[in-house]
Length: 192
Image 1 (cartoon, rainbow, N blue to C red):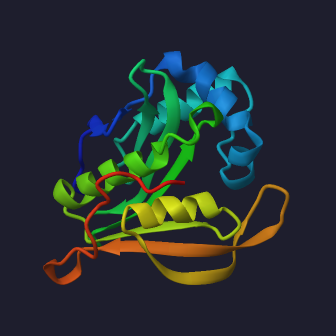
Image 2: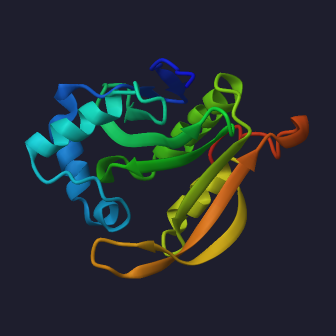
């Protein structure tokens, strides 16, 4: 299987970088946020599990994911971004992100998704990117739309949360099929 190396990416006023042990407390605090916990199961419950989660994200050796900390100008963790299920033969991947509660309203996810999408198309030469999210999470819809991901379908009961509740899922996609990109990236994020 073809591999790729970890990279840092500029993302507007933010930077996508590999996680560091210094990010443990911020990762733990972010994972405890009820809005994060409802939609994203990280398994982070204490400093030890936060450190393990960060280290697993920084290990790209399997060739199936690229995970970054989104950092602000002070290098503080303001979010997390993952490109998972990377398939370099099928030329596809799935996008996922979290914004820390102390950074909401700053378009962290929009900038991160834009940077990772460009990297996926320009460096990995992927052709199809998927972005699933619960329909009840409208902020993710805004992020997807801001970066040109089109709503492809609604999957009834496509997501089950940690309490066992099922949620309908939106599946947004962005493709470069037949040599054309669907829509240019927004020059600046639309208001959230």
